[in-house]
Image (cartoon, rainbow, N blue to C red):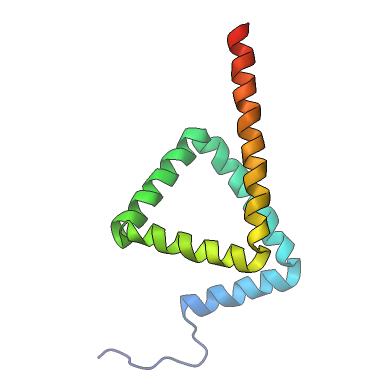
Length: 117
């Protein structure tokens, strides 16, 4: 016959993981997680290379598109834009627009200069 209750001394895998994570956090602090995450990211970057990250992003984007549909991007873009407008105000868009326009002018000039050579 299957046991339906568990002893108070037993714990689930989830409980054990949480307990271990809290122990590590209290012993080493949150910076420990930042450091090991950074190290793991550097190793993964060496393994995948730039093309690997491009492919990973493409797969993730396709998965999100397939799951939520193209209207999802419109909705999150609108929400993000509203959040930025509330946080920084309409002048922010004017400022970044000018910066973008200046950069485009610089790139056009660079292109023209390289054509003359």
